[in-house]
Each structure stands twice: as structure tokens, then as C-alpha cells.
Image (cartoon, rainbow, N blue to C red):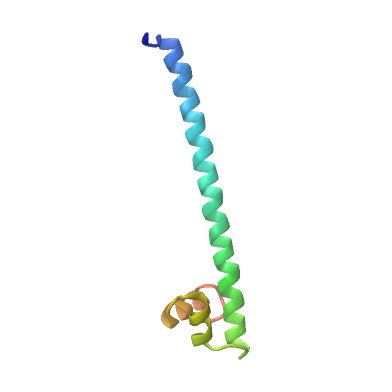
Length: 81
């Protein structure tokens, strides 16, 4: 297979850069969506705990996280768990 010339290589590198930029944006969008989902979930769980509908232990059992993690996340997302 012949080696590409400089022009072909430059075009190929530009295409790779565009693909990387697209990938990075998709990854950033996914991370943002994950962060928003976490915030929504933990705020809602915190509200359930705060209003006495569930115990912290219930939230831990249903989410698979420790009670300490539930406490930290509900405090982090606003209502103090």
C-alpha cells in the first residue's frame, strides 16, 4: 500500500480531529445528563426522607448505597436529608 502524500495526511488528520471533537462533546453531554439525573434523584429522595415518608435506611436499601452515602448526597443536593 502506498504511503499518503502530505495533503491526504492533512485531510485525514483534520477528519480525525473532527471525530475526536464530536466524541468529546457527546461524552460531555452524557456527563451533564448523568449529573442532572443524580441531582434530581437525590433531591427527590431527600424530600421523601425530610417529609417522613421513608427512612434513610429505606433509601439505602432501594438504591444499594450506604446510609452515609445517602446522607451525603441528600445534603449535597439541597435539603439536608
